[in-house]
Image 1 (cartoon, rainbow, N blue to C red):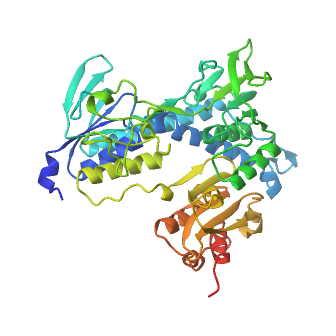
Image 2: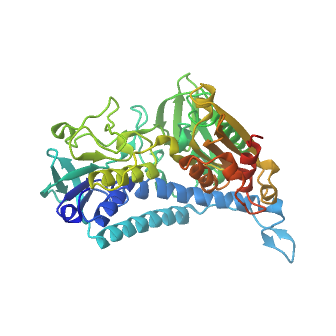
Length: 473
């Protein structure tokens, strides 16, 4: 174990101030190391400034619209109670929506910077580049440079939106996910290209905000990589809400027209709309980073190769977050950063276990998953008992007028250990936690079943699903 005196002499340089960077900085500073963070855009990185924070804030507004517009079914009317005059359907003021989400992102970034400075972390505003395995060159925005000597380096440089050569975002009619907040009014008709997580989330949000949405999917269904039952529920909701899912189609080109955009599909069909959002994946920000000079290897797609404790192929250089291509999740980036620091500084370290990662898709309803998947069970990778319990049977769901969604639990055949789960529901991101805890701690289905839940509650369905997986001895 490295003692405290040794740690205090060690200098860590982190390139990138997103979750993978700032979480690591706080851990290393707390353990006594000297820490410098180099960030070109603002603390929090893309996650805070252009991705997770603004998109989920937009989605929160969309969800509020959903609840207001469905309130009438619960006996709540908007209007004058004395005259009985009903109010209009809710509508979104995009100036307020966008200024709120951008203010919130800026505020979060400012809070992160303050927390780092409070913990003694030195922040350099500029671009970082490796000059070797122990030196980082900082180029400030005014062009001046500084070279930092480092005992260890963490690369947390993130990724940027992939672009199609025939569909260049202009930030006015054709957007990538970082530019979409430039819109000053609800788009009349938005074509979303890409039916993965990002595409599905924006399609769901803008649909609820009152936009006509067409979702172009190259596969035969939305969310092709996710639980098929969950994807089917979302497709049903999309169909009911009027989202036009154009499946088995690729967008060949997107071009500006006089009043909007023209999207040309691979089979020659075209879609005319007011705006287009491209959600076709990301590219790691590894170009021009000096990786080769430092001996850091990347794979064919340009992602930095790391092991279970976030080490790269170069001595004392670690990497975390989207640039590693592990999972494009802020929570995973943060965990990779924390693990890297624990390993480097000789603290207790537990390698990253991808089968314990919980993730959430912020559509309406939300889709949360952890551990083993239906596909892995079907392919025989895991032997599991699977129990799906629809929320239609849940008393609280009925009270809330929740008509779709389910809880699904996977338990290991024979032992009854919880090895995975899926929740499709409002706030599924909160409901997945007990299943995640069960997976992490290798709890038995009876452990979940015998834990008290509040009645009535949506979490009661987690306990009930586990109860139905009990094996009579």
